[in-house]
Image (cartoon, rainbow, N blue to C red; front, side, top):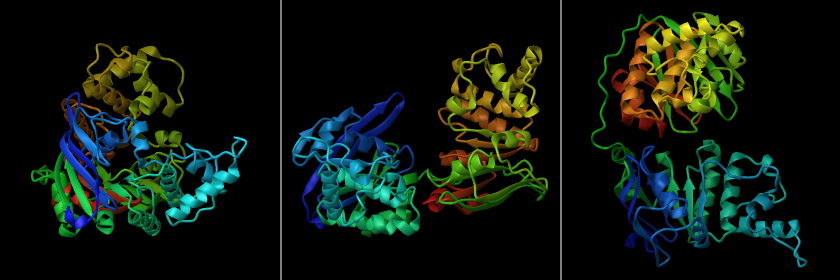
Length: 496
């Protein structure tokens, strides 16, 4: 690595981490030099987070060794990692809203006066020195609740430097930032780099990799694919490394539509979250939504369901305005939402199957009187239609498999005669066989005329189930793929 002209401060060799049925990391090598930005890229599940968690001490590798500042370690504890000068800035800011900038920066090392009592004045003076070191100015007296998103991210970096950080890990630092304020953050990163700090930079935005330069390592399915100097590669090469040579268009028979628009999502916006999301759907269409975490996908589904505040936007079904103000409005207008966390938001885990299935219909009709025979009969019909594997509809839901729990969630919306069904990560945590059953069920229901809008982080899932795929990035729908355009390469291309 003579091109770097600097001292190597980190070497991870032969790192392996196995979970039941999953090889999270397999013989991965990774190194870092003083004053270098070394980017780490890969699809979801490639092993990026596991690798940095091993370095941060929150995960113990099953095999491999690390050499940090010339000293060898089999594993680190979180305290050892911090003491070595390794700081991690997570995608979600871990700040205390009701405290000042100075108190957040020095939360692990609050300053005292000569008498040993806490001193805000001394905290402010120390914070000024740290902010001067990274070449930014934020008033140390300001409350965190008043900070902009980019100021919050810079504050997290400043807090890391309160521990004299020598290796800084940045995990998706721009995920919640607008393009207009990214430059300010990048200037801070470049300033830190010039002071000799080694930076590990994780991002799905490949443009950032080329702007920050130095080297990039590609992980795929827990294995290291390549490490290259950024100036010697291009974006297409990176994408090819991330998805592999087997990536290809999924061959499926697309439905023939009569061209009649059934549903229109018109101008959905919320400041800092979504920007003028507009698209049209035809009867029986399955519309997938792809994009990275933080792109606004889940927020869009919640807005369509009336569960997230918006500034503007209308939902038009068969020429009628059915825009819900609340989830109750959505239910009455025939809109259903399957959330990603079905155990917290989708099911009453301690209740029987028939109670879960009938709940939405009771809400929709305002009928809260118990009619146990009717409930059970309707639930048995849905159990049969959806092939829910359960000995009886009186079975407690928590004892069902993940796939059957998801079918119960779907059943409750179908019993309420939902015409528009929104699904957020519909098969997360479900085995391959159950996924196939869910896909077949969605396809069957779409042929009956129901409209599905599906958010998924699994690109192959989107390819296999969707008639068209809208790609979201930074709160905007930047591209709608259809027909032969629907490939994993295109999904990544427009997402990144």
